[in-house]
Length: 532
Image 1: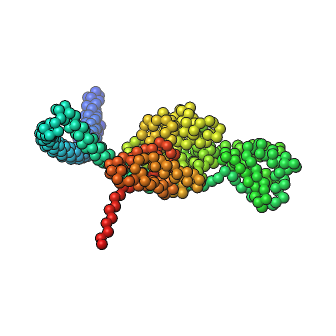
Image 2: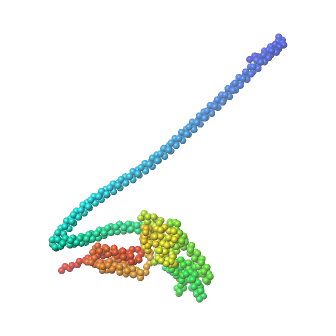
Image 3: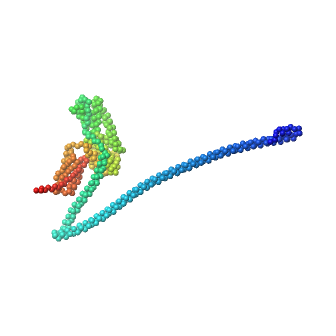
C-alpha cells in the first residue's frame, strides 16, 4: 500500500501544477480506490468462503443425518421383514403340525380299517370254512338218509309185503314227522335267541330311561274342600230358599255339597278346571262376605279369566321344561288343563311330562330324534283334556287335535296309536306307548279299585284255562304275572313253551292293563317209590 502522507506531500509540492497535478491525483485516487475495492473483494471472498464452509458443514451434517435415518429405516425394515418371515415360518410350522396330526389320525383310521377288514376277512374265511364243513356234513347226512331210506324200503317191501308206493308213503309220513319236530326245535331256539337279545336291549333302554327320569305323582280325586271360617256361612252360601247355591252351581257347572260336616263345604265335578275355578270363586266369596247371584257371576267370571292364565302358564312350563319349541297355543292350553285331570289318581300333566322325558331318553339310546320323541310323549294324552266334551277315545281325539294344529304326522300317529286304536307306523309311536305303560306301571303311580283287580285276575285265569292240558292257573302280583301248571303227561316241553307264547298273545289281544303281564308255564314230573 502507498503511504497517504507521502502522496499528500507530493501533491502539495510546488513542482506540480496544473493538469499534471490533477492527473496524478486521479491516478493515485484510482490506485487507492482499486486497493480499497480489492480489499473489500478479498473480504467478500473470505466471507463467501466462510459461508460456503458453513454450508458445506451443514450439508455434511444433513447428509450424515440422512444416512443415519436411512440406516435406521433399513434396520427397521430388515427387522420387520425378519419378524414377518418368522411369523410366516411359525404359521407354516403350525400348519405342518396340524397336517402331521391329521395324517397321524388318518393313519390310525386306516390302520383301524385295515384291522377291521382283516377281521372281517378272517370271519368271512371262517364262515366259508364253516359253510363248507356244514355242506359236507349235510351231503354226508343226505347220503346216509338216502341209504337208510333205501334200506328201509327194501326191509318194508320184504317183510311187510307192501308195495313200493305204500312203503314210500309210510316213509314220507315218518320223515315229515321228524322234520316237523326238528323245525319246531329250530324255531324255538331262534325265538329264544331273538327274545334274549331283544329283552337285553329293552332292559338296557328302559332301565336307562327310568334311572334318568323320576317324576312325583300326586293322587287327586274329583272333589275339592273349602274350609269355612264359621258355620253361619253355610246358610249364606245356600241363600234364601237355596237361591245362592243354585245360582253358583248353574254358573260354575259344579255340584256344591253342604252337609253336616263341620267347617267344610265340598265342591264336586269331573272337570278339574271347573272344580278349581269354583273352589277359588267360593273361597273369594266367603272372604268377601257378599254372597248373592250377581256377585257370584262376577266372581266366577274373574276366576275363569284367572284360571285361563293359570292353565296357559302350566302348559307353557311343561313345554319349556322339555325344551320344545313351536307348539301351537291351543295345544299348550290343553296341556295346562291336564294339570287338573287325573287318571286312576295319577296327575295327567305330570304323567305326560314324564312320558316325554322317557321317550327322549329311549330315543337317544336308540339313535332316534330326541326332540321328536319327546314331543310324541308329551302330547300323547292331550285328548284327555276334552274327552268329557267330545265323543270318542282320548287317543283318537288327541290325534285329531294334533292334526288340526299342524303337528308332524309322526306325532299325530304316535298320539292316535299309543293305545293301538290305529296301526303304529313309526318307532316313535312304539316309544310313546312304551313310555305310557312305564309311567303308568310305576309302583304308586296309579290307584285301582279292588273290584277292578279281582276282575283282571279272574280274566287272566279264565284265559289260561282255555288251553288243553292246563290243570291250574294262578294270577299273582295284582295281575302282573300268571303261573300256569300243565299236565306233564299231556303236554311236552315244546308244547308248554308254545302254550306260554300263545297265552301271552291272547292276553295282549283281550285284556287292558297297565305295564306288562308275565306268563310262566310250569311242567313238572314227579316219580315216587316206597322202599319196604
